[in-house]
Amino acid sequence: MMTLSELWKYFRLLGDMDSLSDQDKEFLQKFLAAQYHKRQQKRITLLMRKSGIKRIKLLSDFDWKFNPKLPRDKIMEFMHTRWLTTPGNLVIIGPAGVGKTHLATALCHDALSKGHQTMFLSLFDLAGKMAKAKTLYSFVEFYAKVPVLCLDELGYALLTKKQADCIFQIISKRTEIGTTIVTTNLIPSQWGKVFDSVTASAILDRLTMNGKFITIEGRSYRNRQ
Image (tube, rainbow, N blue to C red; front, top):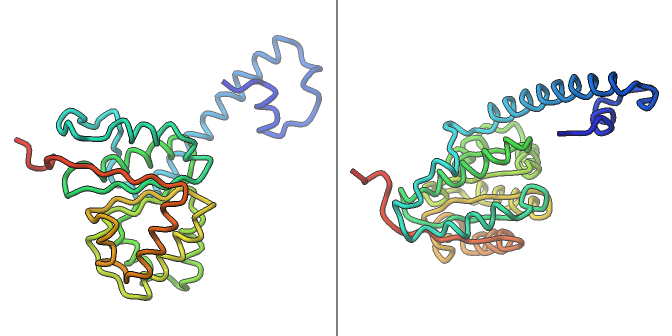
């Protein structure tokens, strides 16, 4: 819980806090703490609505036992880094159905629950939004500055050179600004199927900076009986 002094600064209250009686301080701290909580919940609700996350998924709901090969320790290791305050990229690689999107969604939800703006969308949807953007400059600047950006399903959309160049600019600009999470069914050497070889190499180079690549193997959750 925040101290009265911290709440006083947060709400930018005027006057001398030390002039209050202990009883008044206790009452004011409880009142301001409740107001702070309401503001935070309102902010989180708004961030969730704008995030692009269609279904809330949590790490606590993930069935780690279904695939014994799942690198749970590596996912949790990333979770315990300072990825929400210090830019740190994560690329989750694996075939369809092994839980890549669930894990990425859970990470994004964790960021949102802590008040960090997050955008979650597939590469296909990002390309669609790009086509509707008023200007490519404003489009690139918006996604470059989002604290946490997740590009889901890289490998299921074919891009034009113009689209690929814009995505490179977004990822490049994000290098020291925010965290980028990517899920893909393609190993890095196959990214030339989505981007040309030069762009693919440049994007991978940016993601490697402060980045972690995690490969998931095993059965598809969608095929379990």
